[in-house]
View 1 (cartoon, rainbow, N blue to C red):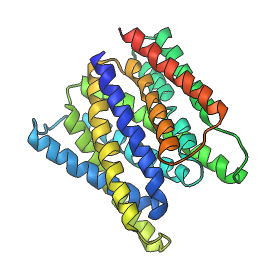
View 2: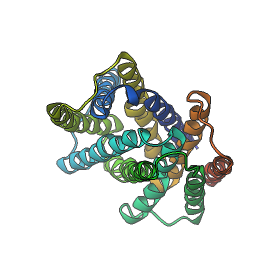
View 3: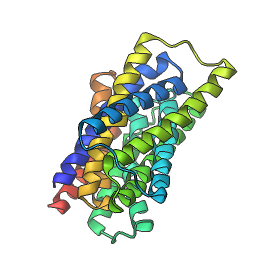
Amino acid sequence: MIGALFALGGALSWGASQIISKAGVAHTSVTRFVLIRALVGLTCMLTYGFLTSGFTLPEISLIGWAMLAGALDFVLGTMLFVLALKRIQAHEAASLANSAPLWGVVGAWIVLGEPFSFTVLVAALLVVAGAYLLTSRNGRRDTGTSTTGFAMALGAGVSWGVAETVPAKYCLSQGMDAATFQLIMLCTATLLLVIVHTISRMKGSAPAPTRKGTVTAILSGFLGFFLGWVFWLRGVDLSPASLVAPLRGATIIFAFAGSAVFLKERPTGRALVGMLLIVSGVVFVLLSAG
């Protein structure tokens, strides 16, 4: 249960980060926004490591797994999600992107060889079913733009789900400490994003940055790239990956509520039904943990 609570703390941080991203991404380029998030996360992680137990030098193979997680989650997944936010509403993008629990459970079974659990499978399916219903289909936007946005958000979910479960659990189970794992992720992501942002600037297509875009990127980076991962890795370290992965779906709840309160979005009745399914899935997996 302690591991589940840490995982929920990570979900809350990630949900808040996603809402903040929606509010700020329109005020700067995608590559600059994500790069600022990575730099903030890296700075916070270095400070956190030096103030606590510091970092250790892991095996080369584990470094490779951590680098893969950073590329999948902080670069590919985040870029896809931010691009989706430019095309669809926040609660829609968060719904599909946070289908990550399904991919996390599947990855834990296939790659990590964790035992099959019918209870966790049902919880994951409830989360995904809720995410599907949360995606409103009101036809108010251009069909092509919306379809592309939905596809990008789903792609982000696949990247996040695999990265946050398979490499994370494998590295931690092989003795890598969470702080070192997160540091390697952030170093990898920062390097890749510097390259991507430099190429983008050379093309000269990026809009001029604004103060709002920079501030929201900093806040989003702290919550999404630092705090959320500190909580999540603690949860993964304390519990089986296939058990905590469905709790990743709780991010939808926080993002859903935040989009309505802070962004003034008006989800449909389908979205409310989807919310109930998400809550059911979270409660189901918590009961199984007890």
